[in-house]
Image 1 (cartoon, rainbow, N blue to C red):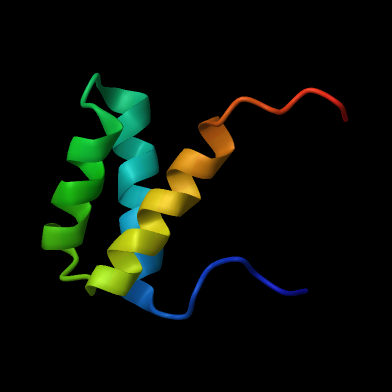
Image 2: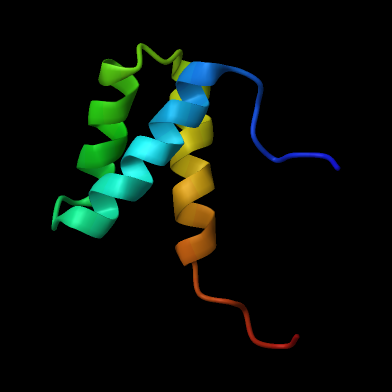
Length: 65
């Protein structure tokens, strides 16, 4: 089974941490992403992935499908 997650423990931990924090509080997603990038020492490429991972699922579906 292929995974959408890139390899690396830090990015997996960051995704888990952001998900947990979103359930527990009212911190805006961009703030959580920024904090996770610093907390888990992610590369800019990993931070970009995290941003896409969380925001693509929130985009409204386009009509016509």
